[in-house]
Image 1 (cartoon, rainbow, N blue to C red):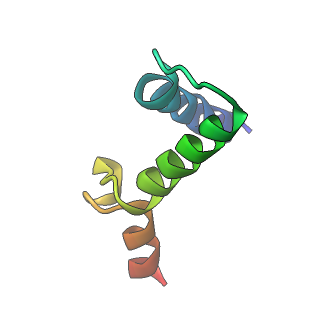
Image 2: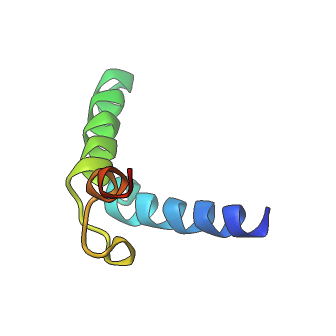
Length: 64
């Protein structure tokens, strides 16, 4: 559980600093749309140094 907990903590830190910090949403619909956009960007576009500078999607497809 320790490794998973550390991963979750790191993910929440990134989420707070890149998405939530200073954000203001007019309503729940706006939050849902912007959160969906962020998750799409994070998983399919944003490159990660720990994944060989590939997006998580690229990395997963490479390992299949």
